[in-house]
Length: 260
Image 1 (cartoon, rainbow, N blue to C red):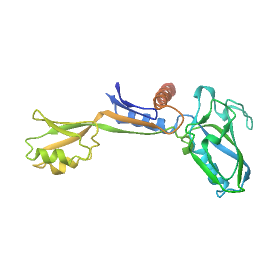
Image 2 (image 1 turned 90 degrees about the horizontal axis):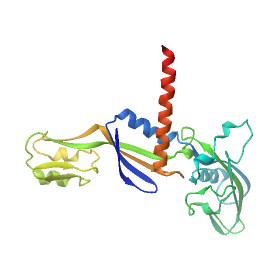
Image 3 (image 1 turned 180 degrees about the vertical axis):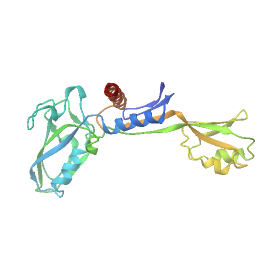
Image 4 (image 1 turned 60 degrees about the horizontal axis):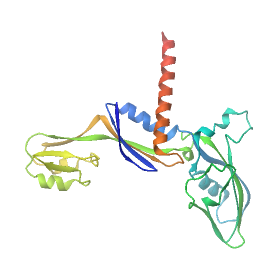
């Protein structure tokens, strides 16, 4: 198996996987979405709220604010006895503000200086004259399998595109212009397609004679995209997903040996 990084930013990574199969690619995709431990607000205690929004709506908004944290510093609440917590399984945020004002994510005061909202300018609620919001919100680790607030990333993959020519194309210029992604090229009497191609096959409808052009996806090569929607970097999400997949394979191997 080979991996080539195509693009990388603070929130997204795109890479090429070669010599693999759809089953592996889909397993990796599912883990990046739903099995990476993420810190998110899951409980809110309201002392005062006479804003225009109900408690439930504000709590929902708080739960979807991505938090920056170090995964090595935290563990699941379930590792404690029921009802017990510690600073390594829970972080408390406090908001206490009077109107008129707009409360943003930067107004959330954290009990842990290393844990904070990923963005400072996420609006939570607008307070008007004589309105006030006072609350405490606790954040803990969870998995996207349980709730979308714990989803680490939006991930998808597509097949690597390739071109096949079965004869002579009579309307080359028209075919090239028909591609909505401008992914087709014709140079040195050869057709080629770049990675922008999403296999829409619009060009196949234009090419004459019918059947002379084929755009197919290689089921051993995948263009993989992971966009972080949490406080983790996209490359860390991928590496963590790989470790989880390795652990699952080892567990399966250990259990499978019991069949003998």
